[in-house]
Image 1 (tube, helix red, strand yellow):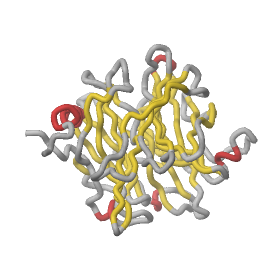
Image 2: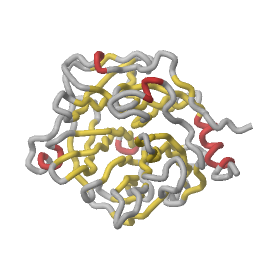
Image 3: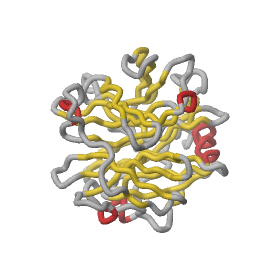
Length: 314
């Protein structure tokens, strides 16, 4: 029997809260994740008391208990080329390691005077951070890079704002230099149901034998407000613009008190996942825009949902 709810919450959630940040802040949420050398790294979105966000590193030996660095790592840039686009904050990072280049690329939402845009930077050591570009038009978020180049091109999934009344959807883009992007097209668009308002990518795509596994969020508007929940889709390994299957139902949603209550209630929002050698996905997610929590699932169970359950509950 197919497991329609593959994730199990860590029993000591939340794993990082505001009081764990060693300097004044309003809240912490939506962390990117990766392994670096012998450590688990979380790149936290920390919101200061003004309501502006920056990025701070938390480190762990086991992936459960984290120690937060004493000071922020990436703050809005003073460089005139970037400052207007980041002046109000840096939000919702994602980390992609591209092995061919031995480089960790970081995509993030740059929030400035023209609205949200996608920023791309890189690091090799989580000490130095180098900005590459602010890309795309305003009102764009949820950008993730694939962990491998295909036919010499970088591939990015993002979520431009809806155009001419359309609901925001997940798009795919290709580039040779991470600056100029082309061949854009829609991958998955909102449908009536649990993700009827908008869709957006969560964690960077995960390579499996069956295809690129993508975890995404969907938003439903209700009389009581928005609900953010999680779905999954599978893309072709060689032609990632081709969707092989996706779940018709959400596979993870707000249930626990720390997900239901907070600055923004009824939100689970992953920005990072780490795949262990035994095939377990550790998914790190923001809960109610107030803390960071952890849930785990077998990758094979999520892939199976994309293929077999693929829009066939009824």
